[in-house]
Image 1 (spheres, rainbow, N blue to C red):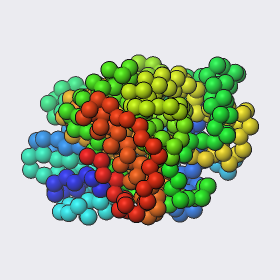
Image 2: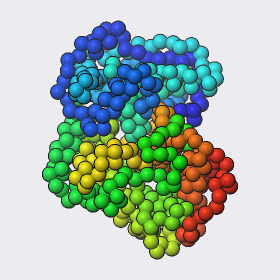
Image 3: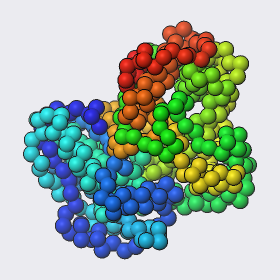
Image 4: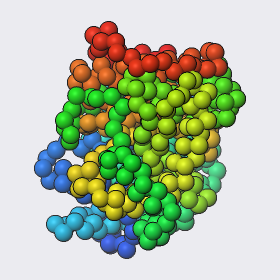
Length: 485
């Protein structure tokens, strides 16, 4: 969030009108299915709220648009956007028995009005405003579980959106502001705004996911492959490749890290090298992650957990809002690996298997872990996650609002250092939410420095020779000094 530094201006927020709030509060319970991830996030958030804990389970995005802001056009755009996505019109009640009731607001009742928060003249005042709004407004126990606003100035404006994670994911955020911008430009030009509707939304996707989970839990080959994977790895979830100095279950405050890895020319060269070795940038990134672990720990295998966008389940979900995520293990054998070009082809095959196993919904994957004999503690342990997204392939690519966009998340606590590695037309870069302790920061710095060195060597020379484990003392690294680029 701190990376977003828009020019000063007047801060505006959009809130539901009193009539809309009344209609939302009276919205009936709908027999709408929820995904395993969404339902558990709602329960967790409501329990945290009951304990007066800070709300940090949100995602956000921001972008810039040229031209003086037309308030009426942007209001109509926001109403059309929320109206066409059922999950964004939903709020939830959770009872003592754990059941979650879903209320869905009629799209015809969605109406917003704009309020001024006065001038924003510094980064500190902007960050304070954003953190307060997203921490208090993006909750799922009332409508809407989102916060939308703008920073108005002469000749242009910034806009931002934050949503509870139960309603959104990273891809949703990447798509959202581009969609709002498209609706805004159409409304400003007095062009017809596409009608709102229920088709192809999140709830349709969840119905398919539930059916898929039932199919796999009946004993599919992919389900058995998940079982075998957990059995091979002592019935445990993947962790960060290096020890972060935290006891099992222990967490620390989040310290976000963002860094460039390669510029446009470097990504092109890395792409060429990966393809020449029988891989892709996706598998090349995973090969480099595996090699970094090998060089620092001597591990004979890399074991990770990948996050994948599951909107490919059907074409109608391509631009839908909601939490469309699948998880899948990735295993890359490293014994005897001498060079990156050896590992990338192995990683390419591993990624193909990962995509196949991603067809198993998360609730079925956890059932596979239980069936393999895992303890309850092992099942509920959050894995260290890996994500690779190529934003060039998103439907909004080349749209101004999309290309200028930035994504951010709430900053709570973590015991992992999950990696989010992204590619766009200009660069390859990464983000991570890391434990903010001196030892964890040193370990993360060691690993990310080594990972970047591997990627950059491949981009520069076409290959990288795998070295022996690195035993250099931690004191050679400054705290938090991950320094890709």
